[in-house]
Amino acid sequence: MTPKVVQLALRRALREVRHVRPVPAGRATGLVRDVYRQVERDFGMLAPPVALHSPSPPVLAAVWSMLRESLVADGATSRADREVVATLVSQGNSCPYCVEVHGMALGSLGRSSVTEAIESGHPVADPRASASSAAARAELTAVAFAFHYLNRVVSVFLGPSPLPPSVPDSARPKAKAVLGRFLRPEQGASPGESLEFLPAGSRSVDWASGNPVVEDAFSRASAAFESLTVPAAVRDVVLSELSTWDGSPPGLSRSWIDAFDDPATRLALVVAKAPYQVDDALVSAVGPVDRELVELVGWTAFTAAAHCVSLTPIRD
Image (cartoon, rainbow, N blue to C red; front, side):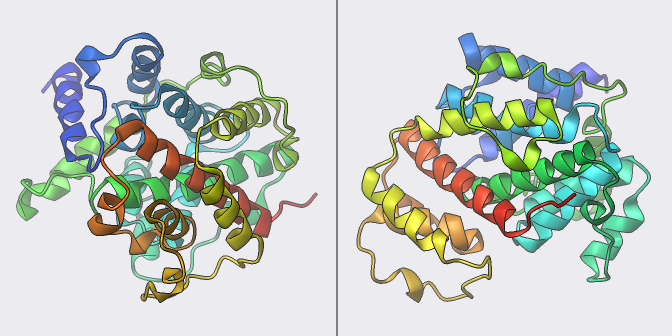
């Protein structure tokens, strides 16, 4: 199969997105079209975890900029080290979809033994602990931030695997190998090329100050998320709950949200603190309005990701 044929087949994976309707690649216009083109060029495929944000073009652009400038673009660290961070964070957040995707990428980079160790529960060195410069620390922290975000969103809108259920068990290893190659572009991506999709942000990003491109990307993304029309009552509750949260999972029961009656607040709290507890009933109670749902989940996931990064600050 030619790369173009495989790329077209991968676009069909958007059908696996739940609760919202991503803009099809062939119908994308304006900002969505421009972001889609760069995603396919630099990431190798129109990744559903990015494309599902397309009902809200500014959120789509913000998410892609975070992912591209942390994980995909050339920088101070290796792509393999960044993929290890992505996989470790995804495992900690109980996101099997992201663990599988970035395990495939590690396999294509010759680091499949790391994925096997992670999956079997053996300790793996976190590259963040040995980052050799401020630029490297900022870059790896940005990867962690991006995946604290994406794990939460994926838990709402996607299933447990990037491969459709129709793929038989016997074919899954080969399908993973093909997909892994698409997640490892042959040529490096120049830093900063996603910044044009969003206006400059005014907020400094202290943890990224050692890496100007990463800092700029996350400052622009922060401004985009802060501008969303998420109900003030939801914002207040989420911020209050996160202010005293130490990052520990609440457990398997959802009794901790019983005190809240508003469906949007209940969903936001679970997305923030226990994304593995999200189910269809919790999402459906909010209502099937694509842009509003993407923006509610997106703002919450971004706010929670920022909190998670603040719990483990980088130090010189």
